[in-house]
Length: 377
Image (cartoon, rainbow, N blue to C red; front, top):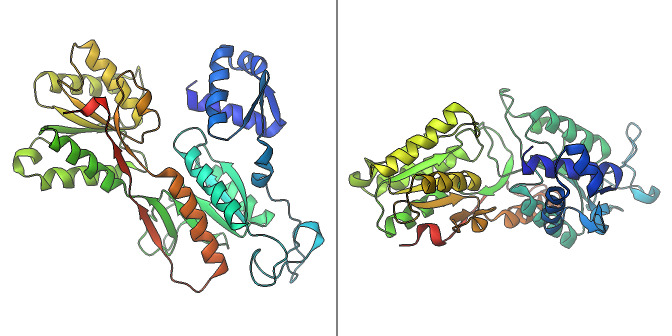
């Protein structure tokens, strides 16, 4: 079981039971107590649970992200607000006697999205609204069920990072929920969609990485990544655009190696890694942008095993900056502004609810490049 899977299992247990003992959970998973304790430390640092002696429990402020529990309103009646008060229309609106309640659905609470969640919670607190959280584990059917349940429970609007589009003409499934929706780190698949969204400009991030590598004198720059992720198309587009703009002597060396959804031990995965190492050995590649971070770490290990040196033989820049700084040789990385995405998403949805007539918006937030040892000139 990977670290992310373990951490999601820990979060599920704590949310279901309110607390957990490290020793008991380690025995259930068949892993060491030290491993589970480290997972708990990571989740506690991200504010997703609180460490206690021998275990973990929900943070004291997690009540603000507890599911909404609103009884269904009678036909034609205004929805009931907490404490029995009656709210006139959406919470937080004119005459309302309850705060706005927003739902947030993300695919993971262990990788990439913890900072998004943190930003959303801080923005919700600052704006006086409540937030309820669900984690879909990248399953679109789970997302649909979670969204429908939140709407039935009385949320005023939803922030969603959907895993897939259902292909229905005229809109996506989230446009049929009956409440305002803001997409987080996603763009509507269909141009006719009126959905608002907030996300990172990943194309710009790829351009940043390529530009930095060019500035260090590299000219044979490869792109290595999992091509099936929601982020991949924008990174790929930005990479090729930057390579073309650098001129034919750079563009002719463009190389894309797709790890797809392969994993360690898979023959096709090993072939891609071997092809990259061989390209470096032969001088056909002298730098690479790698997505996500842990794949850059794997590549660095393979290069070391082949007696190739980073950054001497090949410079590496990873994409996400979740764990890049923790590599044996700290990795340069493109760092999306995840916290700002969460903050801006909540602010955008609250404005939609409080000012329903205002023009709709789609906001792209620029990532930054953090240069470390793996790509120094």
